[in-house]
Image (cartoon, rainbow, N blue to C red):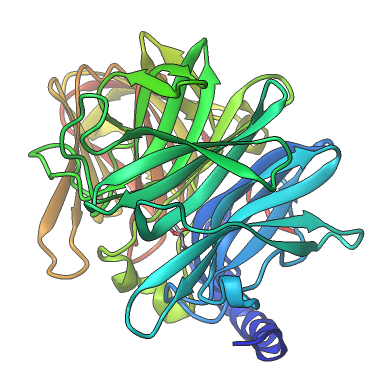
Amino acid sequence: MTIRTLLPAILQAVMKGLPVALGDRHYPRWHLAPVTGLMNDPNGFIHFQGRYHLFYQWNALGCQHQHKCWGHWSSADLTHWRHEPLALMPDEEYDRSGCYSGSAVDDNGRLTLCYTGNVKFDDGTRTAWQCLAVQNADGGFDKLGPVMPLPGGYTGHVRDPKVWRHGDRWYMVLGAQDLALQGKVLLLRSDNLWNWENLGEIAGSTLGGLGEAGYMWECPDLFMLDGKAILICCPQGVTREEKRYLNTYPSAYLCGDLDYDKPEFRHGPLVELDAGFEFYAPQTTLADDGRRLLIGWMGVPDGEEMLQPTVAQGWIHQMTCPRELTLRDGKLCQQPARELAALRGEEQRLEGVAATLPSLAAESLELVLEAQGEVTLDFADTLRLEWTRDGLRLARRSLACSEWMHRYWQGDARRLHILCDRSSVEIFINDGEGVMSSRYFPAAGAKLGFEGDAQLRLRYWSLRACMVE
Ligand code: FRU
């Protein structure tokens, strides 16, 4: 589509679709979601001149993975968001098959986007350009065009630039597939965001002691935390195990030490970032106060996504809540951003044998639980969380065949912190040592029931809606 046809079509889709999506009982009350159509990866997450900016992969025209634009929200406090002008549309030759994922930087006071222009050809092949766009006085973005073609030695699957400043230079990590069809992450360097030098591969399948670990690594993000370098990535094609790597594609991280000049990244094992049914393509940024914040997509491509019932209401997917990252004993821990406490109503408490406790309205609920013994949490007969001595097992029926499917977190789960929002739950285990993020679609308003003879102690809050203005 050209800009002349795309923009009117997007406007019409929003006018028609917005009231339907917002009226859907599965539409989140306080998580970010598309006002119509399909949303996937968070993009360009940045704190810039006093506000957070969060962009997102968006197809306003329908629930398929097509016509990817960059939508744009901003917020001063991570709870009240505002719609900003549509940032990018696929209206140039070099991004005609989609303005794919990327990041934002503060280039001398100018909010600058680095994204992938994806180009698909009729014979099924593709190419990719790394591109720049800069914010204009109206809050929209002017494209500056491609700054980098495909690097030699890789297929057309090279994308998702994450750019940051280190010392007096710019650095970029890029997701890539090499000619042997192995997933890799490349490190690049630039003085000016325009001319990039490819320093080489810093991680990937068959590198750094990993063995075969996927045919494509998407959405890399590299940052320092507590003196360690953390590389987040989405390796596609990792072998499924009995209790790990059960989603179509996982999101994972490596923790280690980075030598920028060689370059060399010495790291430990690949660790899954979230053990739930839906989590992918997270992106991080630095808050003013030094916290490392993460937002992920509460969805996974190529699985059962298109069977989600919201598709019939013209919208699909939502973001996770914003999370704070810390490193504890070499483990990346995630906790809900402290700003979310502003959504809480009055604190309530309950204590007693699980099966004797009343069920709670779980449409918009936060709870902190401690248990002695085994207990099952039942979310509207649709999602079940079994909490035993071995850890957690989350059960949900397949949308395709109705069979129960399971996800696992193994370990001693001492404390759970759970956030519920109509059709999603985020379960934080032991102050963020593990997380399970999942969507679920209850037939009626969500209720949370407790089963089992465990002694349960809980504190809970109902959460206020948080509209996007
Ligand atoms: C991850 C991803 C990215 C790509 C974008 C396209 O979900 O496939 O690699 O840039 O989505 O929407």
